[in-house]
Length: 238
Image (cartoon, rainbow, N blue to C red; front, side):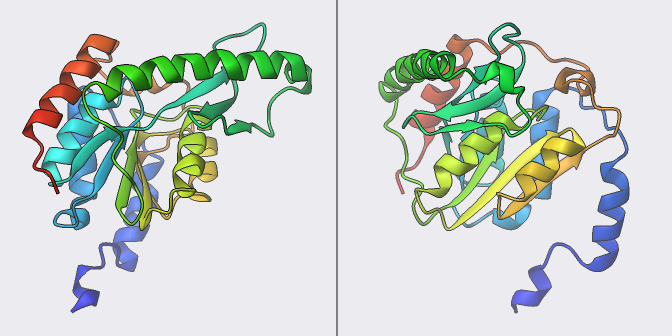
């Protein structure tokens, strides 16, 4: 019985390792979502809970929840920014206030007073977002569920790492990370934390997530809310 469903015989694993380092182009986020759904098809029928990291991954999560016959929700985490380079992530924080600081962060960026302020600032954003989303649906409990956390790609991996660590404390049955593309460095960090990591491409020449998408438009708050609204109204109540 069970053995027939194993998705990774040795040959397939070897082939996957070879294809992983080959850069792969995605048409757009929905193309990436379709390919991830295919790689995760062994979870169909297990009512997986697909948790998207806003904002870019929300349309992806919606498509994946539909393809895998699961439910969609968001997981709220925010990057902690370096003091003088806001585009550099030095860690992340979840909505309970649990912060993760990267061991690779520059010690000069880790002034305790700055960190405390930055954590509070990002938590304000998280609280505001949660209030918006809660008007549509309350957070779906993850305990005992197969949980698939999706993002449109990983550069440092800080946000995904914070999301996985936060979710683990809520005792999911299985914690899966699904990403179309990642830097090899970020991928190895995530693989240590998730029960299963599905990544379609981790090329050595990774510079930024957007370089692997032909179309990579910003996803707006309005789009996120519209997506959640249509999912909430369509979702059967389990």
